[in-house]
Picture (cartoon, one colour):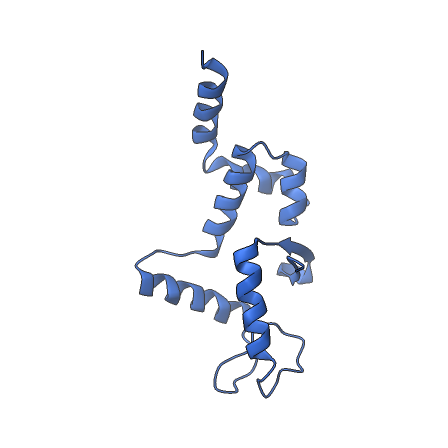
Length: 132
């Protein structure tokens, strides 16, 4: 199963986004259900419920926030980026690879998203290096 999507972001900038097997299975299930939607022929992945038009970026954002609230978790889309960036760098990923995976053309974005957990990574690095 292919685990990539072409995502169009701000300024119509496109990048390929990779995801894990659990997400791939969920998206596959959604696509099978989506095929029965009255406007399934549209190119948008996320269609509205009750035969409403495709979801906008803001609609997807609101859905994520609402689902988070129902679970008692504060959700913000950028938390996912911060988490991914931290995890990638923490596990030894190269900064250039992280920039490519996130579709960033500027190292400023790398610094912004990598900074949130930089001290945690620094302490882990120290512990790993200084272990006897």
